[in-house]
Image (cartoon, rainbow, N blue to C red; front, side, top):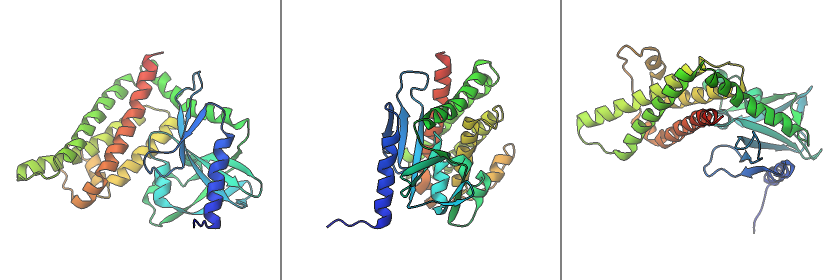
Length: 298
């Protein structure tokens, strides 16, 4: 006999409520892998918005606690919140209120603690503070469309005018090269020779370093206030934080690119997180390459 707790039933109710509010050509999809979100919404309208997507995390409550106009949600796992600000698309937080049978939304980047605090904090949970969240109704989707396209448009215009063309495309090639280096360890997991093992470990460290440096060089040329730049920065800060779990001096390695830097690797942790890091690097590459392709077709 299948049993549900009240919390599980409420969570399912919220997850069923949200897709029913979406416009006709906005398609919700369950993630193939556990990405820390409930669904990914893809816009399939036959216009300039076609192909845009965003991730969605639905939080449900019988009646949300508010402080003025701010919705407060406490006890959120820090590791889960970190997932919301990483990846190749922004995360929309949806707050479903059973009492009102209504929902409100806020972008994760606007409702979570600042990225440095989110990544470096020691507590296992955090508190979401969604200031003045917007109601989910028939009018909200235009605002969400605008938010999504604004980040893409700003970057595309920068590429088109040549301000960052010489930065973006070489860095895409660099990230692709680094991704190949990360895959080497998957294809050669049990290197026997000392020199072979040393070169493999060195290539992994260099690949992680260069992925971060390549992304930071792109960010230097972007308006830091635009949605895409903010999301890209949170993605790479999350990547850095994850790499630091198996390299004890990764920050020093990033700062001293022209000097020899001694680092210590936790090989077990590195092996455990390698598939995740490859996935993160792949998503980053796809996001940057798709923007370049979109621009070249205009």
